[in-house]
Amino acid sequence: MQYIGRTCKSVMIDKRKVRLMTRASIYEKKYGEEDIKITGYYQKDYSSINTWITLIWVTAGYLLLALLLVLAVGVDLVEGITIARLLLIAAAVLVSYLSLLIIYGIGAGSFYRKKHIRAKQRMKKYMRDLSRLEKMSQKKEIHRS
Amino acid sequence: MSTLFVWREKLREIYAKHSTYILKALQLILGLVLFGLINVNIGFMEMASSVFCTVGLAVICTFFPMIVMVTAAAVLILVHFYSLSLPIAAVSLVIFLVMYIFYFRFTPKKAWLVLLAALAFGLKIPLVIPVVFGLMGTPVWIVPASCGVIAFYMVDFVKDSAAAFRSADAEGLFDSLMSFTRQVLTSKEMWLMVVTVVLGILVVNLIRTRAVDHAWKIASAAGAAVCVIASAAGNIALDAGISYAEIVVSAILGIAVGLVLEFLFFSVDYSRTENIQFEDDEYYYYVKAVPKVGVSVPEKEVKHITGNKPREKQDTAPEETGNTNTEEILLTRSLSKELGLDQEKGKTE
Image (cartoon, rainbow over all chains, first blue to last red; front, side, top):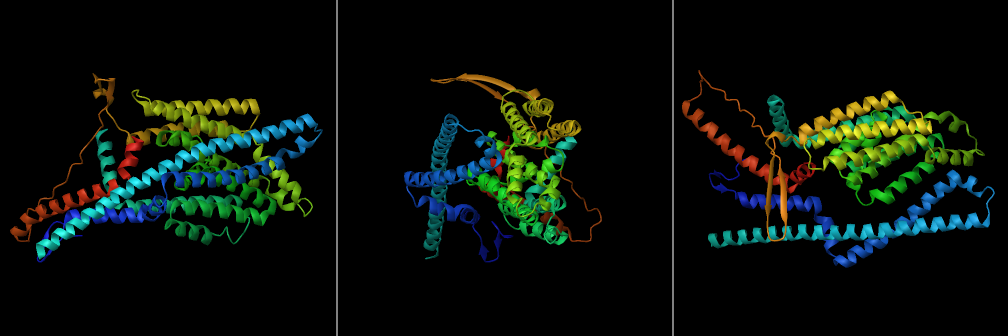
């Protein structure tokens, strides 16, 4: 890198090319693998698959949370329980579960949609850099021939 | 004041040149403090609480992303809890899993904020967190902050009641499971601090994003004041047992840290503020433009009065260095833009 932009006897390194290559390799290192995976899906498919996965995770998390709550205050709740109180608890559990699902469903949908859009934009930029590099190499080849 | 700005620019230059090493050094220090604190407070397993383990873990985690350090810290806590009592380890694992499912699945890169929050509580400076998170982050940062507070209190409970948990026999396993869960989930002090930190972050962030003069200073002071009032009022109402000295000292420290952050990331000259009004076909615009304070670092020139080197060489050398520097600066700028360093800086501003 010491000789960037300067002639070193017979070697001449193209500054623009180095920059494009650096940018491309940084992209590959940071996002490349993940972006290829993401952009392999259509936006709608990607966001809906991940939203469903999130809902499954949320269900598991809710069950774990419920387990913790039962361990913490279960004895107090069960003590002197009536049918009306049982129904009330069941309704509270159901409502909280459904509201959690709705919140996370909407949130995850928008989150993964944005993630797909960002990945696509980055990928587009990367491809543009690659095509620029290709054009530069072709020009060089023409000059040589 | 201008000397300070010059120092800041010098610091920036040093950071730009050696950012990789500086970040790794900071990561190592964070690892040493974190694993050290865990092992000092809940070092129930002798092998895992040795100095070698602390240093080894910190060194290993330095070479990996921050999420590895967070995972290592969680595993270390679980290992210590397991050697004390299986039910406690199980409950802690479930709590960590819940944190992961509801938040860290989405932003694993922000997981290190939990460490910061827990560390601040461990170092007895809890109210620095609302100010720092409110100034540097977004309202969503209340989630990692809350998780950090819960993780800290979980460790604190075990530390305080270690003897009772250790003496529990096989029959008392279920009782210790229930009592620990109840202790964690119904702790007044913990929930009071969670509410305080959440309120503080929201207040600081709300004021910081307003277009008022000295927004950062006002935000830091207001956030610290809200935190002190909320925690003191809660302490009186719930009899939570929080130390007032700790609250006040950490609030003052929070304001000081806020001022330092403002100096580093948001130094503007309010005396030269421009209020502009213009319009297009659809809107009227009322724009407030506040100029940044920029100071160029004076470059020291060394004159060789009695040099032994040939004159020709002395004349050409500075020119070449200048060229190389320009190239390097351009490349660094381009790379830092690609790495998103500029965006992060912009976000904070």
